[in-house]
Every structure is written in structure tokens, then in C-alpha cells.
Image 1 (spheres, rainbow, N blue to C red):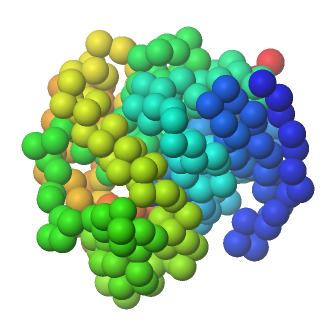
Image 2 (tube, one colour; image 1 turned 180 degrees about the horizontal axis):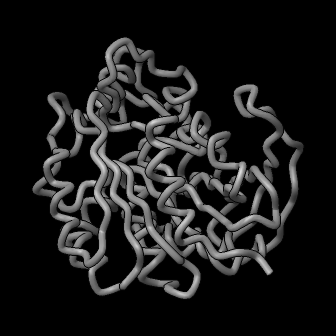
Length: 285
């Protein structure tokens, strides 16, 4: 496995982001890094049909005190989209752990959005010495909390989706009044193959069917923060209370926000995140 460093690119005017590619066994994985390299590491994991760009508005609020690392999970964003590998949640977590190893990170607080929270949980299961704390943002605890979409996802013959299909798919991801869905987030879905789109969705369902997240988390003994936009239209926000089964779990509901609070109101989302990770970050020697 090799690391090739690409040119920095501008993160929505927030400053230069170091962009690189990690050549892993299953394919190339795109990585972004922001903030001081000697600061405590904070890994951000996006959800299904998304990418590192889903964190763009939040990143500048985190880099004052953390080395912020984002990865495009295999099948997403600028990462490879092979048709012949596993997109199971534990496999995605394994790749995330290898990516941190390649970057020289020994300890990291991990934040996952939506299905990215399942990947974060699997990473903590596999690498408890690596993950110091977990924060889950609008991550449903189990399938009972899922709100089924009104329309089915486009089939192979309809791929890539039309603009109207994309907006129909994306609209339940946001609830804040007046919020305009960024075009680049729709581009992330367009860039996926139908196979990677459906395989990653099935992978999350399978992981939750095997065992609910609170049951997995309560045996890990990791500090846990759960943040939920109260008006989520994909996962019932009332299900956040399920995480109360995890000893010491902190639960924060954000009124007026939906499934993607880090995009809808990054400043309100950053407040509980920063307070939480400040207590559980591990300093670099």
C-alpha cells in the first residue's frame, strides 16, 4: 500500500485542505486533512451516497484544536468504485483503520454521520485501542427507527438518476426551512455506480439487522455522544433515547434541524461536538 499526495484544494473558501490518495488493497481511497498535524486526531466518516464534502461547512469550526481527517469510503466521492469487492460495514471500517495507520494516527476520536455512524461503531469494535471516543450524528440505532422513503430508488436502467430523481432522493436529508441542497452533494450521488449505491445501502441494513448499535456500543466502554436533528425525516429522532442504554452516553437533540445538521447549521452542531471531544481527545506526543 502506498500514499501519493495530491495538491491542496480550497475547502469552500475555508483554507487549504491537504488532499491525498491512499492505495489500499481494494482500491484507491481519497483522504482530506485539515488543521495542525500535531493536534489530536478527529476522523469524520460520511454517510451513504455522500462524501468528504458533506463535512465541508463543519471542518473550519473544528480545526482550531484538532487534526481533522476525512475519508471517502470506498464506492463514494473520489475513492475507487470497484464492482468486485465487499462494501459491508466491517470492511469499510477496516479500510478506515488502515487509512489512519498509513497516516501515522495512533488514537482518534471518530464522528460518523448517518450510516457513517455504523462504520464508526464497527471501527471501535475492531480497533478499540485506536478509537478514543465516538460521536454519532443522526445515526439510527436500529431498523425500527428507519423512516421508509415514499418512492423507490432508481433502478439500473435509470442510472445515473435524473436531476428530479436526485432531488427527490435528497430532500428527506434536510429539514431546515429555506435550506438549499448544495449541488456538489447531488454530484456525489451521480458519481456513484448503481452497484455501489445499492450495495452500501444493503450493507448498513445488514449490519443493523445483526445487532442494534446500542447493544454493540454498551459493551465497548467508549465515551459516546449522540447528536440528532430533531426533525430528521430518515431516522426517527425519538429513537435517540435508545442510546441511553450505553453507560454515560450523552444525547443532544437539535430542534429545527433534520438529518444533516452538520450542513444545515454547522455552528450549532459543532458546539456539542467540540465540548465532547475536548474531554476525550488524546494529545500527540
